[in-house]
Amino acid sequence: MQRKIHDKRFFFESRSSLVALLIWLVPVAAHAAPDGNGVARATAAASPLVQRTRVDLRAQVALIGDRALRRATADALDNPQTCIVHRAHLDRAEQGAIVARLIAAHLLPDQDRARLIAGVFPPLRDASGDCPQLPQPFYAAPGGDGAGHHRWPGGLVLHTVFNTRIAVALARAYDHQTGLHSDRDAVAAAALWHDWAKTLVFQWQADGREFDEIALGGRGDVDDFGRPGDSRTGAHHILGLAEAMARSLSPGQVLIQACAHGTPTDGHAFRLVNWLRAAAIIARIDPVARGYLVRDGQGQLALPVPAGPVATAADGPWRAECLIHFQSDQNWVFAESAANLADLVLARLAGQFGYDPADGPRYRTAYRNVVLARLGADHIQLRNQRGGLAAVAADLRNLRRRGAI
Image (cartoon, rainbow, N blue to C red; front, side, top):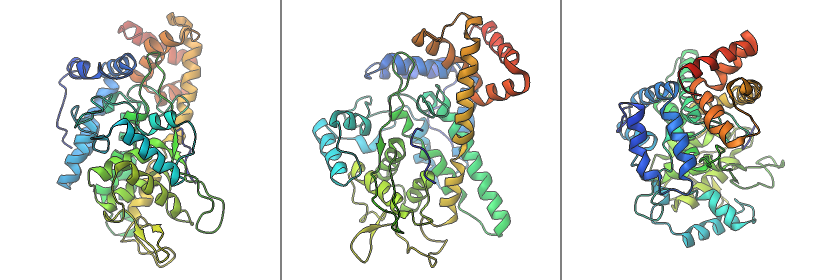
């Protein structure tokens, strides 16, 4: 089933939340929405939960044995000066031309061009220079939009670490069952890379809300078995693939990464083909020349493995790592429910702490986002389940004593 669209050793380590904030303060000031991204960054930097999870993220990256893959992953996730390679040397006119190519390839709807350009090319720092940079650090981004999972500053790093742990655990479980060895480096790196582009598409507005995400990847008329099919997905998925391609990650690694939102099984290979097609257009590379796609007997773009029951598990996206990665990305099912419940609970308790949900910007930036960054929605859900509103209120009083809210 296609998931809904709404969804190491790191190079730069901060010695404290204050240092992390100061590193980012000046560069972000040039961004189109500096107040929103800056406030979210400060909220995440001040959260012990987020900072502990950043350390855990670094540990997960450090376990990748392949040196080149480990270095690329570390650079993308925690280097404040990392270059967004797929956006280098790209002016506004060229962005418009790429969007036009996506539309012509039926990978975007022919709608408001300005909105589509903004969705495919969100604002960056130094966007017109040789080295465009992230508008916010990975640790400050949310894991989902305003209706999705992990929708608070720091939610992305919690989601990513959880999924990476699940991916590695699933690989171990399958290894135990089969007596064979899966490529844990590839599984872990795919989980770490998959949501990287949420730092771009889910930036923060000044009132504490996130940017909207567009759907990308096209709509297929039929799938491989002649059934109606739809390959649209959240833009973050395809922008992450574009960056992986632009950084020359191997075809096998990129294909495993592409499996996060769907697998090629049961006649759904066309979805991955469309996602890789779209990513290659955005990355400005030839996907066939680089090995990400092949031409079939009819000259159509296809995944680089034979379809059908004779496809081998050792070659291409049918391999176990693809299916494991897809399974490991399902934390959103639990986490979205937790986020919905947490929002209801926090709104019910807000008055006890001097906040009013009707005062949207103050409520979100000084209370709601701070509480979720400090506690996480999963914690609030379980506390409410076991002790009701009184238990959650006790946690909030503890945050008040610490001066957080």
